[in-house]
Length: 166
Image 1 (cartoon, one colour):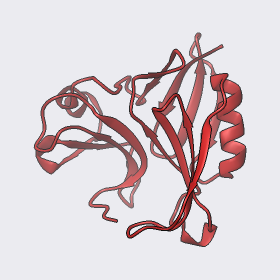
Image 2 (cartoon, rainbow, N blue to C red):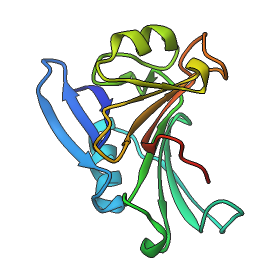
Image 3 (cartoon, rainbow, N blue to C red):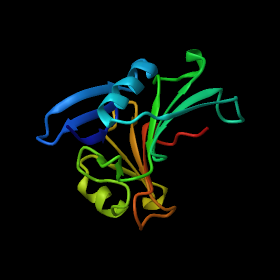
Image 4 (tube, helix red, strand yellow):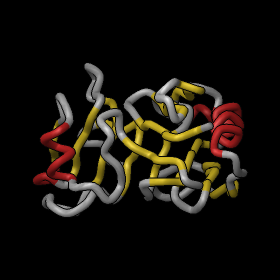
């Protein structure tokens, strides 16, 4: 049975209640297959929508579970830079399944505690953003807090680049 989804810099691990890895979807994998894998492990189907191109992004498709876990991919793969899909979690749990970082931090936890409790974390935006699990190109995952730090983690997002702009 699925107990946790762990969002890191390269993908999402699905863990069982005993900590064993039940599945792994990499951001550089086929979005449709990744959605199917997550759907099977979460145990519920997402709502899927397609959006037209906007000012900062090309046309994209989004699968959303429980209103709080989003997988987004660009309709035209040529528009995707370095990942076939992105993930955003706006809640600490989806359908009773914990969503967290590799160090166990989740939405609602202290952003400051995450910054100090995550090895090799990079803190930006005066403490409001904590980048973790970064590679040599500064690509990894992001925990977003309130601007200028303090308060809770508002969402987890990956992959993300330090100083990324639309």
